[in-house]
Length: 549
Ligand code: N01
Image (cartoon, rainbow, N blue to C red):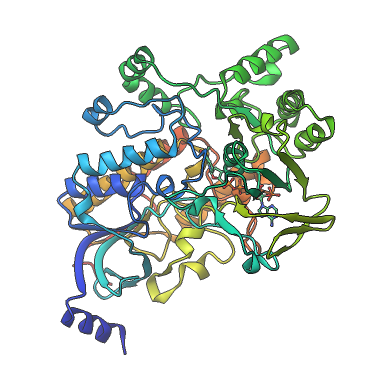
């Protein structure tokens, strides 16, 4: 049956609705986008595959899951009332507290009524004749929308490596990002954890507290700096609330969107000054350690000084010199992969029930019904935890079948790498916006700040279109090519672009290697987006219904 006839059948069955905008995802980005759309008087519908709001903080329920950006920096700033009403209890918020926050926001702004939970967007195609997106959802409905906004997230598409025999494991197995809400009882059990990225580093100390044995299968040793988490007392909360607006303004002027002071160049300092700065950053704790010097990601010598400092700190925490060596044998520049922030991670290896298994030296060969086999032996397990990460940046977008002008599939357009204009739009996909899409600072920044910046930019663009009678916007191919080249050039100057990680797509077999995030800093990125808007959406073609085709 043709698409039009399918639609006609859907209308007949009462399954077709027409909205100004459809938003994919009810995480931090989707919730705020819905709020702004409502403010513009747009009819909108959000589709969320999870059973509740919060996105990342809905799915990642594993023990120890916690944000590593400080609570008062990792929250919305669009509402002064919200900022006054909500209190954070710790320096770094737990998954549970963040999920409560997003539920509070959904209720506070009455957003739930426009969200369809447990419903995935499967397909979306742009109908050029009507300038409408035709969207098919997992519940069998077809929806028309003038605008389609992806708030699907940068880290939503789970990566589970294909290991021979994985399906035969007879025990309990879960990916950290699909952890069951009711939890998993590991008490007295033998637990294996594959992966030592941010998720593995958070879950391992927690399961080690009650499990009989924990086997950590480490392929790549990683830097981690202490979180130095602590509860916030009334005084600390008052101080943060009072300084919230000023901190928010300051964050907008910084490269990563964090409220820490800007760093000096390592090469401008003598050895004593550098040592003092590194020690004080270590004592302060948190991901800002990667920003200790402003040349840390560009100057190999500056990077190596900070890297050596952390490797020595790691070794000093571990009782067994052989284990210490394996944990501190880190062979990439610090900060070139997402710097991990830990709570008692390395100390956990001093427990008698925790064993580090070096699967770089002796790779995993198969998963059996009873556990994990490496080239050196078999590890009997009752529970297997996959802390193996995500198909980042493009995974969620490409898990849907999105087709633009002429039926071009986004998957085909991006077969050789994601090309976007400003990380907000893709040429040939009119009226589609991406929040924190590839080509924007995204996960290299404070996500809440970047989400608000994108949502505000999109909402302002929609308001401009409505006021000026435009019904269609598409990024120009030349503007997209220029921006994508700029993103690539910035990546080439940084140590980040030269290192294998999920940031560079190296964790996904067959994925084109290359960094898809904008490395020029959120402050410069914001200025670039603002300039495009101020120049009448330069680099985009806007069309009125009366314009000739
Ligand atoms: O995933 P990862 P993640 N055999 O890709 C290993 C955010 N986040 O979920 O490095 C053996 O970093 C893989 O090994 P290797 C944050 O942005 C934030 O931990 O490829 N091992 C690696 O050790 C973060 O960067 C927070 O050699 C295999 C691990 O799995 C991002 O999410 C908390 C393997 C994957 O690490 C992703 O972090 C959590 C195999 N076949 C996450 N396949 C906070 O805010 C994969 N691995 C604190």
